[in-house]
Amino acid sequence: MARHLIQGRAVAMPVRIRHATVCTAAYLVRADAARAVIAYSGMDVAEVLPGRTVCSLAFVDYVDGDLDAYHEFGVTFMVRPPEAGPAARKGPVKSLAGLRRSGAGVFVHWLPVDQGFTLEAGRTIWGFPKELATIDLRLSSPYKRCVVRKDDRLVIDMLVKPGVPVTAAGATFSLDAYSHLDGVTRRIPWTVSPRGIRVRPGGALVRLGNHPVARELSELGLPKRAVMTAGFARVAMSFEEAKET
Image 1 (cartoon, rainbow, N blue to C red):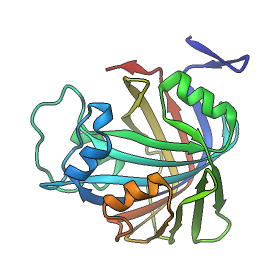
Image 2 (cartoon, rainbow, N blue to C red):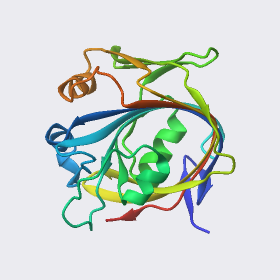
Image 3 (cartoon, one colour):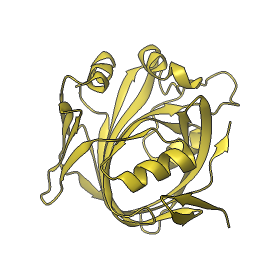
Image 4 (cartoon, rainbow, N blue to C red):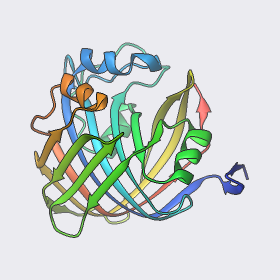
């Protein structure tokens, strides 16, 4: 079993998250604008409609896992695998299962966290672009809210409205996450088992601040109506060893 030494502590692979609460919003954005944002990675976005790709915003409360408890916010893009041929034009991918069937993966562009151990683990083990930020999660009401500040500047204030319950008993999805750090692109096999799922069209309110990441999101056309939002009351995950692509 592979192990990584992080701050004097051995972290065994795969890393397991036993309980996390997740809220996410997916947006259709211009593919050319998204390509400009992730050009540093050498990866290409997946076009779910001609000239359009998916940018997702997510906030997560990690309650119990191998990297301890922490809060996280993520900006991700749907991407084509590095070995893929010419992009196929398909209809919108509406679920994790549909994402996997499409052959697309998730590129993690920005991933602030609020604890130092997961910061070092994420960067060292998988090359995730984790950085420290202040992440205020308000999850006690049906309306879930996340406020992210970095360097004393507001990045984003995001509210997710409650959706309609969806039954997915026993569902487990496997997909590939991609990262790029210090000139290296990595593929990370990722397994997700969600429970307590609520989904709705639209459903997100976003206010952007004056941080550079906020300006990037503005250049993608945000704030705008989300294609869909989803809330997951309890999610289990596992992250395998990263492989350079």
